[in-house]
Length: 184
Ligand code: AMP
Image 1 (cartoon, protein in one colour):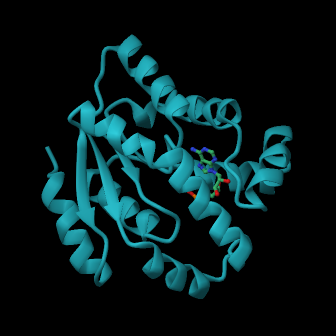
Image 2 (tube, protein in one colour; image 1 turned 90 degrees about the horizontal axis):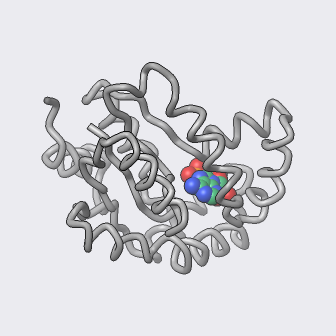
Image 3 (tube, protein in one colour; image 1 turned 60 degrees about the vertical axis):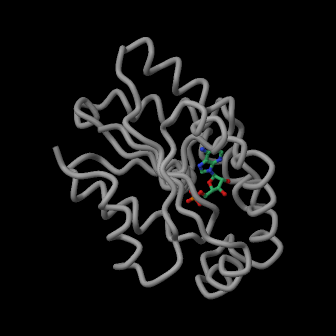
């Protein structure tokens, strides 16, 4: 299965995505994690990405795409993967489509984890990751609204979108997620 997870920062997307990937026994690929790793390793791409991440901006498409495409070439991605945090722009979605079309393999589904903005602000305020101060949080939400939200329509038109209510205890939310994607 090839699954894309979409949701605003603070929706609990990472936790749910990881759990689903484990259940399906496919790699969980988080572009946020790949970028943080590159930044910790102080590679040129990582240092460039860090400038954007620290202010809550999206990292330029080409930089993220390069990191992810390299990761997708690894053997463990042969039978599927779960993408967490990619695509985040229409250009990224189109680039993923091109790649999958070239390989003749479709996406299985796109899961939107939906949580309202008020709830997100209170969750993010408690999380305390280093880029999570209030200004950055608002900036990340604004970027989500502007650049990522249009993807929901895009995938709805492609009949791939499944919406999950992200409100509630993590186990409750996971039960909704798991109901969509059963192991083969
Ligand atoms: P995340 O861990 O998914 O919340 O991502 C953390 C940060 O990494 C985001 O705020 C962006 O700056 C950057 N990032 C992660 N994924 C992408 C992506 N697909 N496109 C652009 N920037 C990204």
